[in-house]
Image (cartoon, rainbow, N blue to C red; front, side, top):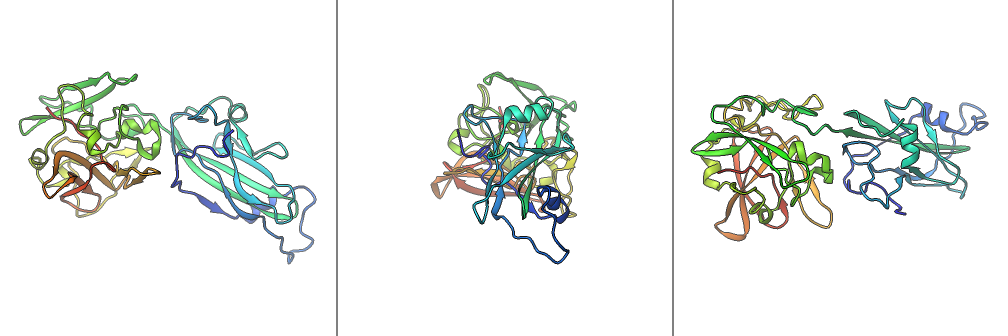
Length: 344
């Protein structure tokens, strides 16, 4: 059995808080303070629980050997017993206290308490708590999303279904689940309007597979060379530049869980005039642990061209949320990962 769960999210955004009212409620019966001036000691360490930020359903055991979500990081100063509890809000109104001597929330227990798997798209919070008689406890809140990956599911406002003269729909059947892409004719080429999501290469946002679609996957330059399906290819730097240098012409007013993806900046006027429907997917860097940067702030796309001054680098184009122009840059071919649009 693993001693950890959902470890894909190495850079999990964790909120730790200490609420006197909540912690008092977690203390075992009979441990009331003798008077208002008495200060209880605290448990040692910091509570630490990990969960995927984006899921298709919850619980989501990505590995059969992972049997539940483990609560870690807290020890008793005197070697005493520590109790643990958890709840998923807003689905659960009361916390579930784990069996004595365990810090693992088993998936079968979660399924039972949640009334089956949690499949309704939306934003949820997992609250885990550690407590011991006579001590201040600790709690942690982790927000996660149940994602509907369909077009106009959790991601809306892309205008992908808008009728475009000369636009077509492309079906990529290489994956078990067929992915659908929409095109727009620009400068003598047919351009994809949504990011490549082929799972035969690349990595999904935050290593969460459900995010392959709608926001696409991140590919190294070497992977991107052969990632497009038959009849399609990676656009050259010159072909990207033929679309102009106005970022707002490519950006769309997309919303993810009904929140604007591109933050408003007065310098940037989003028109989607080219109907490229660009969203701020960010980018990734491969390493011992995948690093993800710029979600809701950047869009980065590979070109087919190497850097003319360094063969180990390749050119890409990117958009910054607060700048009106499209930028040119180069990055390592084997570690930097960007989005892919295909052309023919």
